[in-house]
Length: 169
Image 1 (tube, rainbow, N blue to C red):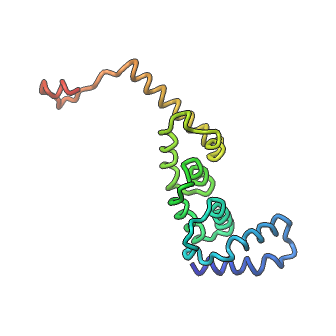
Image 2 (image 1 turned 135 degrees about the vertical axis):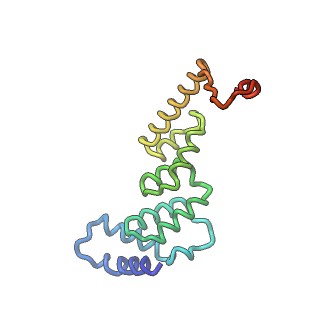
Image 3 (image 1 turned 120 degrees about the vertical axis):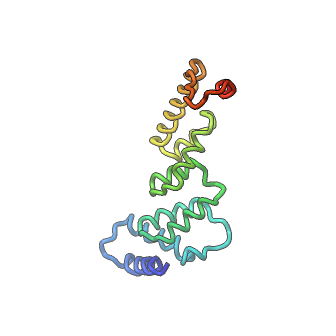
């Protein structure tokens, strides 16, 4: 926790006076100041539920400035946030390397029907992730249809010798 506060303090004091700042870097510093000014340290953030926009802003800045406790705060808050759905979590997991979110988000999206994945979901998760999910869903549907039309013959074990055991198959 201390290293994050030191990092934030140094960036807060040094960056605005640095002569080589471009205009976008000045905007970043301003954004950094307004986001973090009232929320240090991140473990003691206000009791009200933060917005998705606020959490994404803190996530971007924490990732950029390598602020570990800010990153962990956002991960914990988004895990419990009611508006953080599977497409958003999948996008963030891929973008910010959050491996704990990839499989649950992927499974949630695979379990949805084609019509339940909206255009907005596709935009949120990104076209690459959307393509992979749709391709996987299509492949699973083809396998299920092939098995339904041409069921494989069951392979009985050598251990199944009783007539009752064979009938179970």
